Length: 144
Image (cartoon, rainbow, N blue to C red):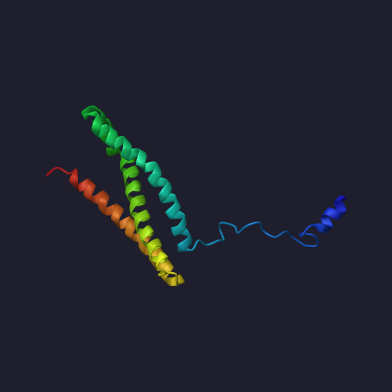
């Protein structure tokens, strides 16, 4: 097949300009349901990764005071607090969204408005749970 024949056989032959390959990120809007789906997958990965932090905590507690002091120093660092907050938020989000998926298994919540509302409630609820856990944890460290 010659170059001319290839050009004629192309689906783009005769077009003035090529079609876009995909929507551009600046003009494409993410529905909250799509964001909730992506967050569900991301929090699953975060939980798998965060479990390593929990294993470190358990091994440090079983290994004695010196090992636990090392873990406590890391956990009390701002980065450690951020990691723990992220783990608790991931756990809360994944749990609440799992309940949402369970409702879907029973045939409930498929209407567009219901799906949007429950997605927003799951995001808001998980943030409130994680913030409450962080607040309770910070309060427990305050001197009496």
